[in-house]
Length: 102
Image (cartoon, rainbow, N blue to C red; front, side, top):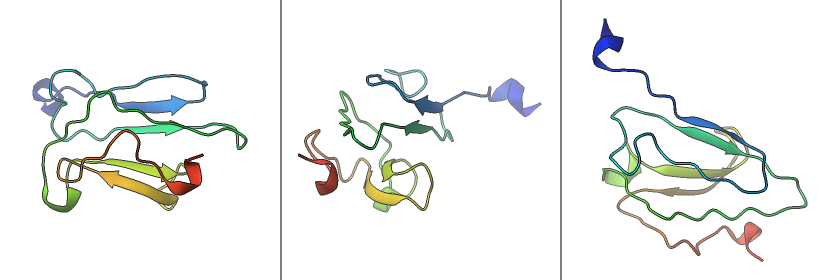
């Protein structure tokens, strides 16, 4: 059975607290192959959100095709894309979308 060779790894979740942190499974070791993680972070409309990456490392792929971090203003794939980041276009922790910077 496939699950005997490739155990299911849970990844992702929903955050509504004012503070929190998350990481990929097995961090600081490499994340598992073929894993897709989705975290939905919800804050009140009157609040702003700051994401800080203490460590950022994904497997390099051309044009962020395979491994990347995608940040959207909303919980769906059709929500406004703030940025898509991978090993070939690393960003500083100070980078943010103009609408969210004050």
